[in-house]
Length: 128
Image (cartoon, rainbow, N blue to C red; front, side, top):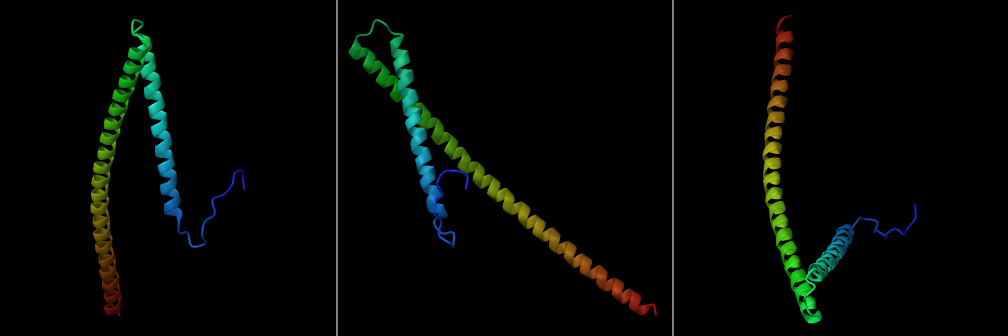
């Protein structure tokens, strides 16, 4: 083993999906926290440029900027998720179409090869 601790797995491989789902949730949480942190930092930076604001106004502007930033990020992520789902559907449909085409082509080739073999066997048997 190369450092760290391994996640124990049942011998039959069950639970792998649960582990992957848990890791995805953790990753999503960490990404969300990072986005919130970035939004707050950018809100503070924006409000800092408005030197005439009082402390309360500065905090309000920074908070509203961060909220708007988070909403823009949320909207963009929802658009990306929707597009990913559309692409998944398109690619799945295309994959199934190509798979059917390949299966039909393979079947035609196998039948053709069988007919050619049968014709060759029958042809060589009649020449004697």
